[in-house]
Amino acid sequence: RKKIAFESPMQKVVDDINVRFEKHFQSIHDSGYECAGTVKFLKDDEDPRKYGVGVRVKFRANQKMQQLSADIHSGGERSLTTFLYLLSLQDLAQSPFRVVDEINQGMDAKKERLAFGRLIKASCTKKSPQYFLITPKLLRGLKYDENITINFVFNGPHCVPQEKWNKFHLSKRPFFEKHSIPSNKRIKV
Image 1 (tube, rainbow, N blue to C red):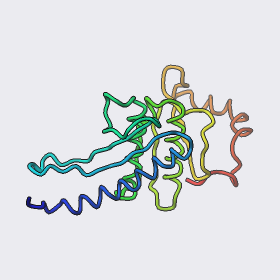
Image 2: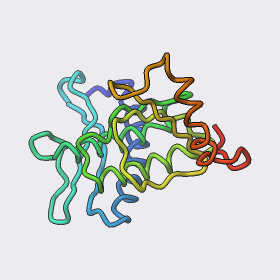
Image 3: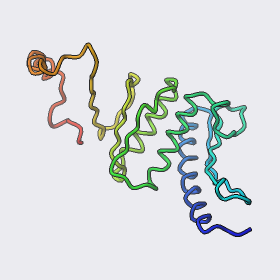
């Protein structure tokens, strides 16, 4: 078999992703959730167009590792796996920011808390890019890091119209001043 030029570098990249991916799953496992995951470089001796990346996971103690599949895994399990895979790519792809759009949809509360915890840990290092998490909901009682800034954007028929915002804001000013964070305690952006 003739070795294809990109095979060796591709194997190294997938191996690097796998190390990170397994660490993310291990961290979740260590918090009490019985799960594991691995990433493999898939090769076809006959047809290099069939090369790919395989993701194998398990979410129960009595389960064997299986290829990630909509037929086997729940939406929350697939969302969590996808999320952890994307986090595993973080150090390998240079980008000033990342947008994570509704990744928590389909996750039960336990998976969402675990995913959010991994995101906080991954995004609050000096080398990490800025993250934008777009979601219609967040669970109550999530733990935030002091380096996190949260902006809520409200939209819909029950919001104050733009032309009335200044009046609304001024009428609520005592509330905002009473409940705002003092400038010396504000989170850095």
